[in-house]
Image (cartoon, rainbow, N blue to C red; front, side, top):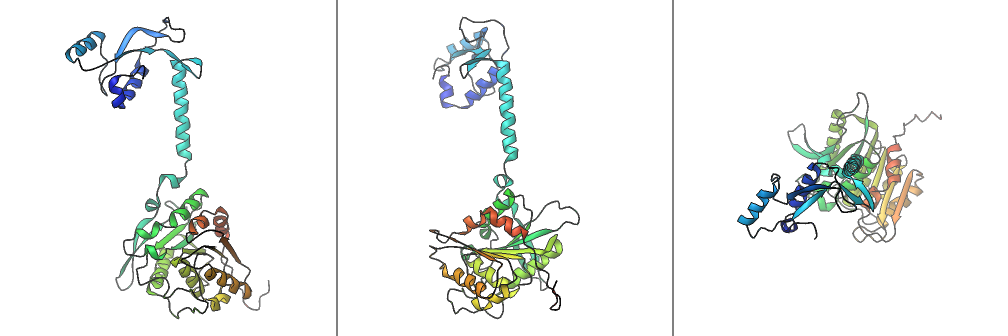
Length: 362
């Protein structure tokens, strides 16, 4: 390439040094014979290693004699150049560079927080110790500096079967990043809880794959621990008791249906994704706003699991449900669901309905 030293081809840092030396060069009013350039009176610069001092012409020649294999090229430093066909003086070019830097800085500031912080950084490690001394780890995101007296919604996230374990890490890698990204895009502040259940100790004892499925009398150990952690967080965080939401995917979708059927008075809204529940308990969900999602090509959890629950809610007289079925979508319908900005807006508008005495009609 013309105007580039042999070493700069193999060492990109030479370009950085060249630009630095160009910017430090003295301005001169003298004009060369070139019609478009105003140059220094034969001041030359050696393209040398990074942070090398500027060398005089005599010193350059001495180095070339002592190092015959070192190929150097002397270039003149222009005082002006042509940009897009127009002659631009270096002072103007410096101003343009400053403006471009400010534009880049503004773009970086305007980037959503989700692009700057991963879900691992947002969901910090926490631990809960029960009355018997058992310690249970979980992950939680909460407003860092909440205003005094202000309460925030709480979102309980239930992961799928592939994220079960005890590392307190795997369960936040699937689905939750999409949910957190949508919350940040809408600037929705909430306390987000993600507890990890163990293999063999799921959110539910059995998956509601068949129409004759019936919910067990007691919740599983993992579900009981989850509810204990929910109570603990409500004591230490500014949680709005009227705005506690629950959502889950796959196994967590079954767990979401199970939780709202067991504790319908606790939750203000639910978003079960590719799950299912006990159709005989659908009448308990009449007062819970619910938005279910499923893909019609799901081979892991048949779409009929959600269809049955929605039909059971319709027959029970519920009118507070929504259902989105994605055509052509397989098991992973949660990313589309959590990216649905309408669903996020709908979710944060939901509040628990105050129960009135039977004799009150207004």
